[in-house]
Amino acid sequence: MPDLVDRLLPRLRAHALPGLEPGEGFVLPDYTGGSLLNLTASICALLGAPLPGVPLLAPDLLPPSASRYRRIVLLVVDGLGLDFFQRYLAQQRSVWEQRLPRAALAPLTSLAPSTTATVLTSLWTGAGPLQHGILGYEVWLREFGVVANMISQSPASASGEVSGLNRFGFIPEQFMPATPLGVHLARHGADAHAFLPIGLARSGLSSMHLGNARLYPYRSFSDLWISLAELLSRQPPGPQFIYAYWPELDTLSHAFGPRDERVMAEFSLFSRAAEQLFFDRLGDRGLEDTLFLLTADHGAVETSPAPERELRSHPRLAEMLHIQPTGETRLVYLYPRPGKADAVRKYFEQAWPGDFALLPSAEAIRSGLFGPGEPSPLVASRVGDLVAAARGQAYLWWQNKENRLLGRHGGLSAEEMLVPLYALPG
Image (tube, rainbow, N blue to C red):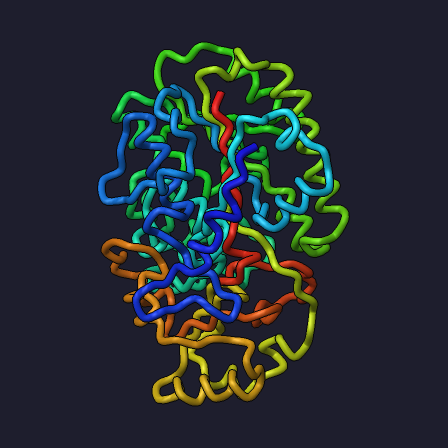
């Protein structure tokens, strides 16, 4: 299995943005050809539907014969960081290493923030976060007058509510200023298919992404692998993009931490099912015109609940803010009251010395941290006045619920930002 990680990783770790330099554990998104945004551009180009203005992946990141494939399968395993995948390959014999000697493994960067709602939106549009405007788990939507949870698409304060933004006039299919991939591919004669867990398949976020892609809700990973094999056993009339998303690794990483044995065990079971129910079932002939890609939206970093990292333990800081922080607990958007920006900076330095890098949000936008292109008109209001990027295991918790997470993401650490691209030519 050609392993390109050691050769390509130094390039990603050294990638800089105008005004921002890597360092102190930060890995910056490489939108020039080494990120998940560029993966979408390359998939579209290989299917004969190029995305204008979006750079392709660097040439050494996909098999040289990739252009001969009529079908591309993209499997996104939520939370599968590069470091986790490498540890898995080193510890266990698996379908990824033993049965697929023709595959290649390369590193990619996630986007900023390194979180599901942001990254999946880019994968389904080819637009960067700056353009589509979904800039985190919780986002201040000025046009609706509410801080919204972008996964549940409800007010962030409405715990457990789903699609609650609808009562504010929010229409998922009309919210995003970018063309869904299914619509773009159809214009070029290619079909899009999406395999999603049944509980997420018809969510507002999925409705926002899928456009006219054909949807296949699945109930378990055995259902996923068998249904995916059944689709690939049919001869397509034209080019196909087939997307599959599996969220359980991320769920377990949040609950137990990304290094817990439960996380490794779950991925091992998932991989064995892939071998038995998908690859063995199809055989080489069943995949001969297919390029199979495995990647992730982000990785995860170990954290621990700590009262000193909760906003309610810092009432003086809360008083200096217009609204509670938004974004991600490891890439935080801050809204200081007039004249309080310097005081907020000083508070962070004194309360959490060395734990956060703070920069003006306008500078982060200009640097390209949130991607290239013309920004959505509402981006500036969605990232506040200051961005606080966490170092090490730091985070800021402001939600009105118990702080239990043992694994987090959204930030710029190598553990969160570096993901695998595993490419298997059929």
